[in-house]
Amino acid sequence: MKAELIKKQVITGKDTLYVFRCPEIAEKALPGQFVEVKLSAEFFLRRPVSIFDCDGSETISLLVRSVGKGTEYMLSLAEGEVLDILGPLGQGFSLPAEPGKCLLVGGGIGLAPLYYLAKCLKKQGNDVQLFFSPRRDAQLLDAIDNDQFPAVIAENRKDIADRLPQSIEGMQYVFSCGPEGLLEQTALECIKKDIFCQVSMERRMGCGIDLCKGCVVAVYTENGLEYKKACCDGPVFDAKEVAFHEKP
Amino acid sequence: MKNLETKLGRAVFRNPLFGCSGCVGHAYELAPYTDLSQYGGLSLKTVTYLPRVGNPADRICEVTAGCISSVGLPNKGPDDYFANVVPKALNVLDPDQAIVSVAGDCVEEYVELCERVQDLFGNRIAAIELNAACPNASHGIGYFSRDAKAASELIHAAKSSVDLPILYKFNTNFENYLEVGKAVSDAGVDAIFTTSTPMGIKIDIKTKKPVLGNTIGPACGPAVLPFGMLRIWNLYKEVEVPLIASGGAASWRDVIEYMLAGASAVGIGSAHFATPDIVPGILADLKEYMEREKLDSLTGLIGAAHR
Image (cartoon, rainbow over all chains, first blue to last red; front, top):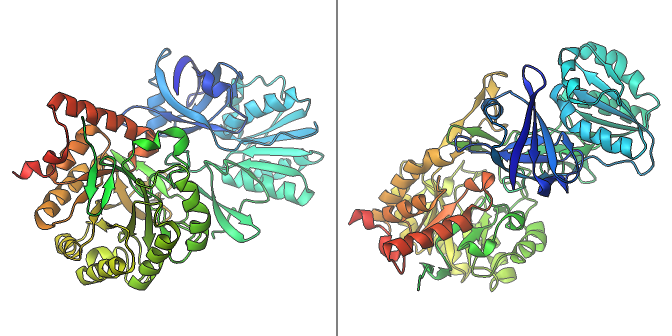
């Protein structure tokens, strides 16, 4: 699909918000889904990027950290440029059937898919809180309307271990995206407390549409350990399902 | 009237553009993003005699002018494949397009898979692809691509077991590939489908570790086009049977170049990853080329650079 870049906003020294006009994607996008962005002929593969925000009819926003050649190239894009973007792709977060207390646990640029989720949860009448780490990345929160979403900010990994259990206490639904260590901590805490938890898994992808079978995540199934694919079975998985340290 | 019909041994395809096994899923994953009717043939992802979980993550990463990947032929084995995968693929492909790709550890395993394919889908597919480029537990990677005698025995055994046309998916990255290509040709295979993807490695400079879970993997994409071209150029001089080229082709120009080097048909592989609707565009471009060059058929181009 053709997507016109209508706004580019620097959020931090390494993170940029890109707003694209693309009704075909905006009309269908669900929180936790992603798009595959085609850059220039220099780049052989598309880049998978989480949907950060969506107005439901015209625009989608992508919050992108410059970590490699592709994401650095994106910085050179000018407003008005038209890109080829495929989406929305993948299985997103499951919204609760009944409104309740929700905690979103984001690590660094893992915040990206949680904002649209937060807005959808809020609209549904849920109580939404944010747990974010690490503090050095807290400027990322400038990309969101954080008056609406009170945030606990952890300093570092040790601080997460100290404070995450308390933040999860009393929650009914927990959703997380970020480094795998954080996802695992979140998953374990929720499993112990028997709280519904979903995690968004990041993998290198070849195509994003299940052609290459590349983006595997090890999961527990009734048949034992199996590989599922982040692009079509995920990127969002039930926290109980993910095998963080085992392979089939 | 433009005629793109492509005859490969006993098989006749509607045009010379093929989807390569491993890059087009099982066709049904690709169907929402393209017009599959524009493919001459499409090879489904390979089924192996025993189920395989495939390689650990990461399985694919970008490199300059291409990607390297090592997926490891994941599949749930023949029972699941024949009951669920092939029937679903045949819902989106016509019988003259569908190619079922099989791999075994030894001749007997290949033959048993071929017989099952013929029994179950014999009148609903165009050909069987013997994947001889894959890992081989007993003899190491690409055994049937680097042992001329084994390759010849495999073709003879497959041909005497089934009537379906046989394509040989052949890894040309071994020193004796011309010898093996000739043996396969002499054994009467319907066509040789080359894969000319040399092994590569990508090291993450942050983690200081190889990116791929399998450490190394074949390199694909435009970077390998000239190497694939040379293999086709050389094979064309040695073998009697038609060649399906693959390796880096992503445009009508690449297709014409491969034909001039000696290919009768061209497989489009990893270019699907970024451009899943690539084949209808290439086909339209080929038709425009024929119009400009006042050609009714492309067959006159096959091997023309040798003349």
